[in-house]
Length: 442
Ligand code: 1CP
Image 1 (tube, rainbow, N blue to C red):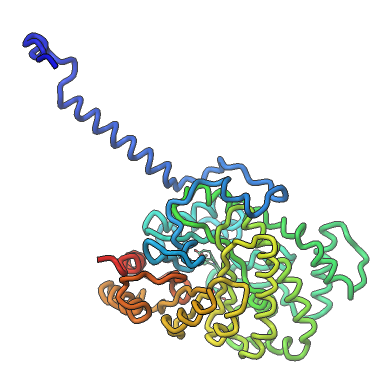
Image 2 (image 1 turned 45 degrees about the vertical axis):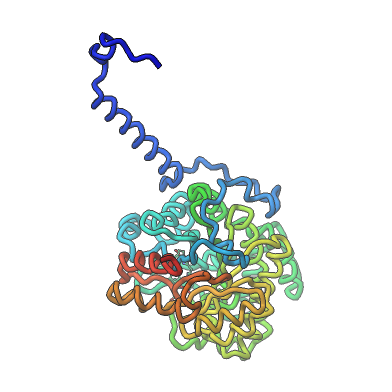
């Protein structure tokens, strides 16, 4: 290279070096901001076309969405190695977040679920704060009984309230009739009705298209940052809500109906199971990458009754889903029913979400023997500890269960034993997530 002539080197530059440097910096910052926004935009404007459900198979869904940047939760369920222990928490989109309270203050609960943009926004909110390994679509287990024609409202301070409790055969026959009327069928004999409704559940589950649209939109906006979880309630849990109609401590009505009219209860549970299964299949086709079935009222049942009234319907749900979508990972949460773990070793579920009463290490070893995993099961009370104490307790629980972390456990997803409460400190959830991720990293 020849040296530049002195006259050129000393010629006045059109832009000063400082200006050029600042312009370059601005360009670099601009590109980084643009890329970050592309990577994770909390805008839920519905630019994504809802998918034509009927036309696609479960195996074709992934290629319609951005590639995964973090699939640790999916890898964990499949028993593959992970970069870090994946973690998410139940009700991570909820009232402990001031931004959730602010955004929802003028939006009625079920209207939030029914508006895909709102549901997407709420699902993504916790991702602005935390490095989560899964998102769960903002919705509720009670949208299913609602879609089956039962009138349920979310009342502030009371929780869900059903206008008319579901307690008699006549009431249930009317529900079945209503469902059949929706698909243009009338005059079926009462003893044939349930079978006819079951046959029509694929069509009937279309009533929840707003959930499917929310899932499609949210998975696109997550942009591969973490898998999106779809969910439903266990048939037994949905039955308890519909039968009790409002909050109860005694579970009088559902227990007495179960013992006095088991055939009616089995009939209701069977129809609900088919509805739930079709609902979950459609969530997968819309983009859900894992499914969780919440048996939040498992604890109402003694072990024998849980084996009769809940387990067979949980199994039916998963069998129907897996017949259509064999690769979809499924988690079941038998809440506060530790006896359920051993009964689930041969179930079609891939993972059991544990309550805090179970020993994490022991449960993990038991399920691993059956090529299954566990999720959980930190006591939600850790969220009320001073941050340093929380970190120490979480690290200790992991060490007791899995050793020093030199090898990260497979088939394990960290979570709390139950959902976030409104009075929990958002900062502590950050410390929880970071402590889980730090395990095994020095
Ligand atoms: O106004 C509000 O914000 C109410 C709080 C709230 C939220 C945030 C309710 C009312 N539902 C939800 C959303 C929700 N519910 C999600 C998605 C958000 C997320 O997890 O990030 C999910 C997965 C659920 C599932 C759900 N709903 C369950 C199963 C989980 C569990 O806690 O066992 C149950 C039991 C419900 C019913 C329900 N929804 C809401 C209330 C107050 C209740 C009743 C709870 C009870 O009976 O104690």
